Amino acid sequence: MFWKKGKSIANDSSDTQQPVQRKISLDSLKQVLDNMDDVEIIERTTLNDQKVVFIYLRTLIDQDRLNESIIKPVIQCPHAMIYESIATPKVMKIQLLEEAQKLLLTGAVLLNDCIQEQWLVIPLPNELSRGIETSETETILYGAKDSFTEQLEPNITLIRRRLPITELKTEKYKVGSLSETTVVLMYIDGLTNPEYISIARKKISEINFDLFFDSSQVAAFMEEHHHSIFPQFQQTDRPDVCAYSLGLGKLTILVENTPFVLIAPITFFHLFQSPEDYINRWPVASFLRLIRYLSFFLSVTLIPFYVALTTHNYQMIPLQILFVIVESRSKLPFTPFWEAIVMLTILEIIKEASLRMPTKSSQTLGVIGGIVIGQAAVQAGFASKVLIVLVCISTISSFLVPNYLMTKANTLIQFGFLLLSSFFGVFGIAMGAIAILAHLNGLTSLKQPYFSPIAPFYWKDWIDLFIRGPLINMKSRPDHLHPLQKWRYKRRM
Image 1 (cartoon, rainbow, N blue to C red):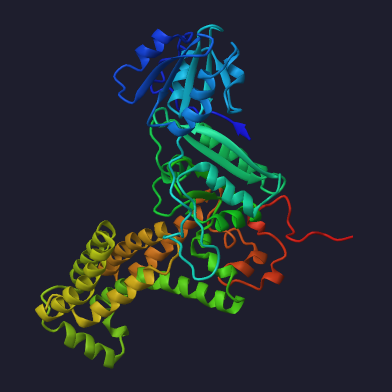
Image 2 (cartoon, helix red, strand yellow; image 1 turned 60 degrees about the horizontal axis):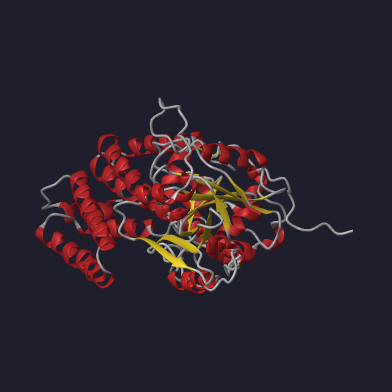
């Protein structure tokens, strides 16, 4: 395991002078730790009248282990070699004040041996972590039920249990001059393309910011297209998804204090894949994946098509359906565009409110928003029955996309198409679709094409694109990932 440090220390680029490194002393430590209420400085005497001083932050260490493994053995030490009496193997000697500060703030105990005139440091962090729970963002009926937590070590363990090979490498970095957040880059040596690894290393090392508390913030500094609404890194809290992606030739980025892991490089089509695709029978999985693509199309175009047809292209509507639309809109005071804008805006308000409210209250809010407000809007003459039905279909369709970030992008695309349809009709929707395709074709993820395997074209990868082919026929890894090992089976003699 490697340890590397990103360029996230200096906030003022004009200040090129290196700070003066000072020797550690008890007085200098007390000065640095002044006005910190959770600092403990304890003086004790051993059996041979040797004075020792313990310094630690009680909010960051395991105090039970401190008493049993450090304080009691040191006090009962009958000889002058305190170093040998500590009942933990992780004991180091330090000399610099800056190093002592950093170690204290990571959950270590400093011990001052006055006779030997040396400072010892013992890592003793208090690991605050919730248990391994089921994923709430990517729920599946069959398959693994565990998910990542906010702690790095358990997260790496969950991946290593699925990939028990020495080729699985981990590289640690530090980002954030204030948060000092640990970032871990994971890849399979000899399988992942070295170009991806070098690009990821370079991007992480060049991060220069002060605070990082989530993996999406790290992704924002690693993306090549900051103004795009499409995510260029896949975020997941499922270890099985990470392990499968590593096996295909991708790399993963784990960030401290967040359960969501970044996966790259990805394509637009990876955002429509679910872990359950590789559990179901391949005809069923293919059908469900096609349903997701259809749902995405409906979620962004259904309401704009309604506005386009009722405003500019009503001659394209069959006569019997036209009679229904005219009857439902006969007493409405708004144009189709403003009718749709008002209903979609109210729907977004209800969705955001349901996410912020407690679980039981959000269920009540959903019933009120979906039934009461919708029915009241129709009876009050603010919306037509046809639009209410289309809004419900469009909203339900947007939830079929497995990636939550992609679901939010759907909303912006829908409003954009809605605006174009109000001015140009169906032709405006066609122009918007061409613009979206051109934008997707220009995006990259770790400098790899975002719209592959369509552009550039890799015909062999289509077996796991719009459909999910039989696993027995998926013998090679995706060509668009350029893995060093193409075949997924072990060659026999």
